[in-house]
Length: 420
Picture 1 (cartoon, rainbow, N blue to C red):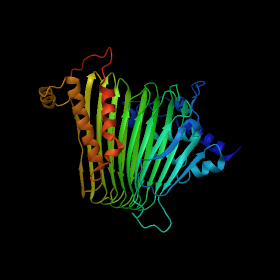
Picture 2: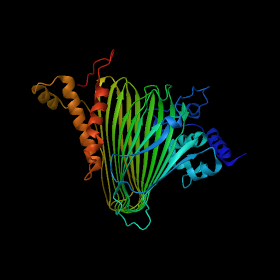
Picture 3: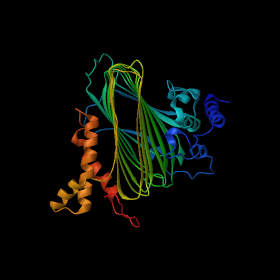
Picture 4: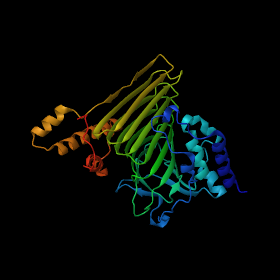
């Protein structure tokens, strides 16, 4: 038996012996995921997708406009080949070590059992270049499904001192794969000392898709990671982030714009302050309508040795129509006295005074609501990217307008909300 097949079978055995995520698991009790058979493709013959790599399926890498590029080494690897599989998973947790991810560990085992392909990117490291000399690296990654049930992998390594902007798109095209898909994605980010990554992730699955994206970021000394997520709901949609601030002066910011219209959507953000003088900020704006179920779980852990750490959490949930279920769960776990930490959650309707003044300017109610939500979303992303806003050339304002417009678009048979 070849080594790649043995690794897949070992992961399945781990899943069989340890079992799937129980319904009472703390991190998943408000929105339990489908069973293991779904993520392994064991529920019967799954229809194949028509997509082909030559037609843009899988990972495709694009420059962003005419921006200057630094060095980017990209390797598309076949996980069924033993040598390529070893290269693809090099430096990542082994099957047994996935237990460190707590309740979500079974997702990692299922991924290891099913993974067939992945992409590794190494950004920076030009021979003889000094830190910051090559400027900012601008990249766009797009993923289209290659199979009805899949477990893609993305590994990105930023060399010390590198600055990069990454736009990651999961905007599925029905013509590429007309079937409902099941996708268990793993993303691993490694930021070297002084490296900086601004990461915009856009995930808009089809209504019948079942999606679980897991992102694991490790930050070195003085590294900076800023991630903004724009996600819409589906039959099941999980976005889980695990961010480790491993060395002093590392900074992480996470902002999630969650748009659930009659569907399920959950974001879990776990930040670990393992060193002193580290900083984190977690924000989420969850909009839900119809019979949607939207959950935001934020957990920040400050270790005993993390003196001078700063942590902030801010979660906002707004029902925009119908009778959705919204759950906001901020949580701080602090094991040191010398820290600054705040957290909070706000649940309620759109501000009535803003709606009133917008209507006084001649706007109809639908337009007024759209403008207010767009403003809240834009402010969320501006706070995430701090002193280094993304350039207008990326078209973020237009993207937000379209995303909010789709969420607020009228639908038939949707009861009126009692929350404004």
